[in-house]
Length: 245
Image 1 (cartoon, rainbow, N blue to C red):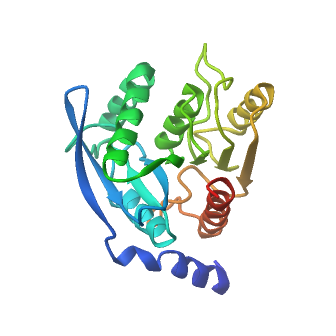
Image 2: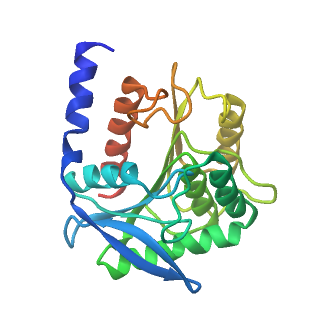
């Protein structure tokens, strides 16, 4: 890692030392969920943030705080349930697998999170959905649902379009940021999504980062790639400015 990249990444994460947000307990279909809300003011655009397969953790909260510092209110959704933060791989597969098999529930949970964000003062009429890994797959599910948003963005997210679904109802531009060294979500998956979006006439931008494996933004892990993380973050924040004006 070059000195300039190290310095840039240090600046990128400088905002993670404070807590701008708060825990929000909300209910969807009779079950409690525990989200995180970072408020940036009554005029701030809203970002709905979807977590990875280990549930809503400090990682997503730190990202939410970073975005709040830039002037965005962020609601980090909980798609598993209050207190459900799986640490074992088999448990993570169970919880994500249940939602992959029940797309209606996945959509309902995201709608419930948006309702909770609105209840906290979030502007859901000027909102972008973003997600990491499993959360990226959830974001694309929301995009296919036809939910009115200003944009949809994924970081190393799942890209497969389920059988019987398409992007004909997608309401806003899609930004995909993907590592070309990702063996879990392949470049064939990447290309297939590009064709699906093009067929539907959806404005999109899809970027690959050389040498970046799956989960390349997860700092502290052996998969972390500072260069790809910094570049994808910069592109995402520029995307936010473009679509939430």
